[in-house]
Image (cartoon, rainbow, N blue to C red; front, top):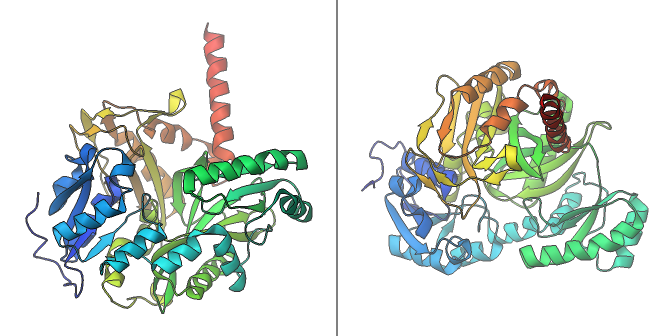
Length: 474
């Protein structure tokens, strides 16, 4: 382990001398690097399964907080706060996932006299509740998907909303995330059946049974806007396209979106900054939208009050290090940029490399990494938790690495990504890299003609084609 932070840092923090990273995996590595570049000492919490992780090796201090089970370690606020006290942390960076959007945890951090690297607990509470976020968006004159005015309190109310906005409708958990607590009803009887199921699923997953309704847009694009704010000023850093999803989990992202015209981009990004200003947003955040390409209309759906997995493509097209800016803002610095400073250049794509076997229904593939060759060269970046000889634990999210490429245009970036994927080798476990190689060869993907339901239909066609070839061969 390192014994001290970088002595060559170009910035000395006023408040934050030690930041505790309350997370694991590639995002923990990313925060540690950003902290060291700012002259901060970086500590990280570790479970039993992560004592020998890359983050633990890179941090100035690794503090053990519990067993491999996330509920007894990374989701345990009291253990994390005790770790902060043990390592003398001034601030806690939650990364993404786990407790990153937990308003109660942020409030505990604030009450302990520590800096929460993110927005205030009150903003997390407001924007983390999808129904409240929707109401806030409407106050800011930001378009939202036609639906209920907040949580529906009865089946009769849900039926009336569905009648008004028209079927099909989407049932969404008010406190949901990661695609959980979402169901679609195409007619009244299906709504009667699905609403109670969605409410029970939401209660089990999030401790909140609240659900609301939205019009279901069958061929929507999922586009999100990155914002930065210091509580007084807010800027956007353009948008990301995140429509290639499996079971509402993103697989590949790119920036900028290939589907937007310049005037649509301007209107979308301006609406995001308007909404972030409405809540006095501080830190990095992401506003997610559905874009109805047929109508040329976009609708706000939710805000993620944290750093996103796919933030690297935004960094590539703007040249702004979002993790360093989060730490600077948390340390009390005003926003260092005006909107005129942020210039969109080139194109970037990101592949999520997961420890899953795409040929066997994405079965998890933990195990020992016995070979590791990263692609390199201009415009290629790897954010990862791996090193050769590392044993991937079976207890957490399967994300191993993010392969990010940047080039002067989208066609050039696609060619660079294809080359980088051919160079990548991760031995000992199955990964989704093989899926990305096949996906990039698809004409519709290369042309940017896809939507949120595209990938699952595409994979079904691939399975059918493979089955037909095998049957013919026999």
